[in-house]
Length: 161
Image 1 (cartoon, helix red, strand yellow):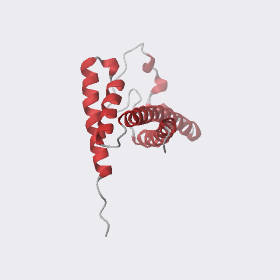
Image 2 (image 1 turned 180 degrees about the vertical axis):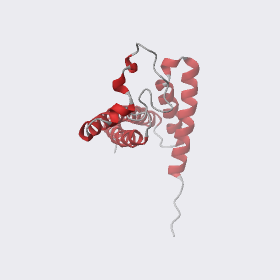
Image 3 (image 1 turned 180 degrees about the horizontal axis):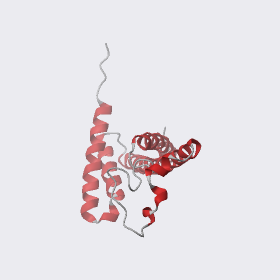
Image 4 (image 1 turned 90 degrees about the horizontal axis):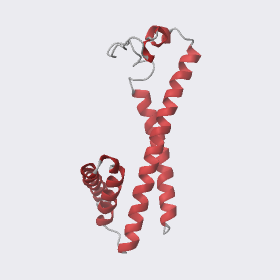
């Protein structure tokens, strides 16, 4: 595929899909859903009087007393929100990384490990830019190292038996 635009859109779409699945899985494994992390549940901090979570309607006993259909609706709503959030984040990261890598590859006219490292550095710095220069530098280093490791592994020759 030659078009950077097509690569960027495809990576964003695939990242969105994978992020959605990942978010759905993580939501199903989470213990801070409305059922498990409700105020008053074991391990949850007790809400202060007068705060929104302090009502008796938020206790686990009252949630478990809801009809099954309502419990499932609440669970699926929570799972959908987490899945949507994760999908948006993964899609944005995939599109950003792919677009930067494709642009660098076009400028350098080479397809090597350097493109992945530079794209990872730029992506990590962009993602961490709101945390200041030190966070951007750490984001650059971390994402560059991750990109280098993945690209080096992908470029390894396969054993053909």
